[in-house]
Amino acid sequence: MGYDSNTNEAHQAQLDGDDLSDPHSAPVSASISELATLKAEMNSIKQLLEHQVSNLMWQDVNRRQPVKAMLTSKLKEMGLSVKVAEHLTHFIGEDTKHSDVWPKMLALLTEQLDTTDNEIIKRGGVYALVGPTGVGKTTTIAKLAARYAQMYGADKVGLITTDSFRIGALEQLATYAKILGCPLKQAKDVEELSEAIYQLRNKKLVLIDTAGMSQRDIKLTERLNYLLTRSRVNIKNYLVLSATSQMSVLQESVQHFKTIPLSGCIFTKIDESLSLGELMSVAIHNRLPIGYLTNGQRVPEDIRVANSGKIVQKANQLFELKQKVTNENNKVVPKAVGMYD
Image (cartoon, rainbow, N blue to C red; front, side, top):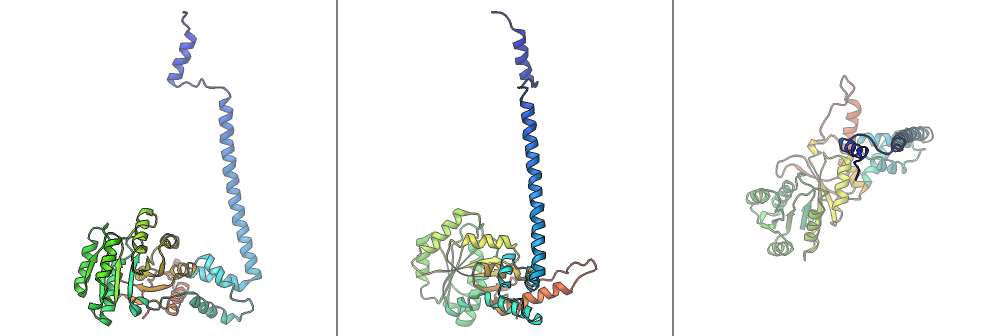
């Protein structure tokens, strides 16, 4: 067989990485690149047009419905979501007297905000606190147990922990139980949980501390849901959320834990938050009653029963402070929420 030098050179050139590809591939690659660039430019133009149309629509609302525009703007500055703010403004007419507009909005906001009326302390029963990691479920349980013990006696309270994931979780709650003088049981599955509740059947209030989990951890949530819904006793679940979380994070947590029937929610770390609008917005949007607010680590001092009127009043005070108190750079001086008396 003859030796084909041209074939060998071509093969060697391919091994060396020389560009001996189809001559038509270069124009095709260029066309794809140009198409991608054109698509990106069209998307940019689309976003610009959407922004301009949005501005035009808002200007039209300002012109035709100045009261609605003013209220929406103030509610957004208070921390409420656009959706909730626009929903609330539908109930205030444009013919409302100017001096009555904001007081009526605050009254409407108070009506929309639901609370559980101190259900845990007043009625007793079996309650589980669920929620993401690090929001303060264990400390909140200690506060509720201590409050109940102060009013009715420590012998009326029982604690259960299902947290077998976090290191030191049992020891932390055991310390609180020892200080309070109430029993503590540990349950790792449905059978143990039912048995623990049965052993505490003579208690007026039983509080269950659950494992903290990410709202994206599906397996742990399914396990918790199975644990709490398969028990032979009716367990009421309260979702514990941090008031310092972003609204999108709060909303995601609520949607995730809604797979478990929720009786209410508890907001913690109020003392570290700068506004109450976000938590009000999440509660209203999800029709989730607020049970309690906590504002520190002291047990049992740093907890308050949720009161819709006081929450709205406090939110308005913070909003007014935001409007008035500015520094030389025209930036709002941060001030934590604190707690109402």
